[in-house]
Image 1 (cartoon, rainbow, N blue to C red):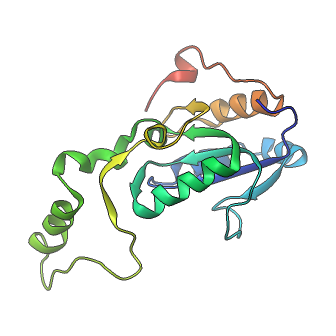
Image 2: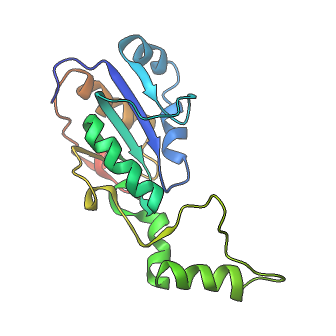
Amino acid sequence: MIKTVKSLATVWLGGCSGCHMSFLDLDEWLIDLASQIELVYSPLVDIKEYPHNVDIVLVEGAIANAEHLKTIHIIRERSHILVSFGDCAVTGNVTALRNPLGSAESVLQHFYIEMADTHGQIPQASVPPLLDKVVPVHTVVPVDVYLPGCPPSATRIKSVLEVLLQGKTPVLEGREMIKFG
């Protein structure tokens, strides 16, 4: 663990943004948090490039496309503590429901061509290629802390962040802290 936490980032990969909505449910504690850290990257702020030397990053979502794959490697390289934030990041969860349907190509073919009402076509422009399988974050890069939940409650998020801000490793025990879903 790091001694003094100065920076926090949040990242949204393949997921629904529910974990970020739960983060916002921290309500007044966000003011306390803001007095302790600098939010250096997030979908909640307008910063285009992931910075170097991020103390803690909360990564929401699974790895579902080529852009996610590239991004998670950059995040891991530039972050001290990576928190797998929510069930999609921890297990693949809802994002991985497409896995039993086959390869990325077969999924795209089925839903954009075969199921199309008229003029089906597979999106090409500005769309990152899908990976054949959606995978949780830890299958691609090392994860330091797992924060399950779909989404994790604000109480659970706060308890993990409070411990990390003290430079300690959070221990998630009991049903309220480790329950999935």
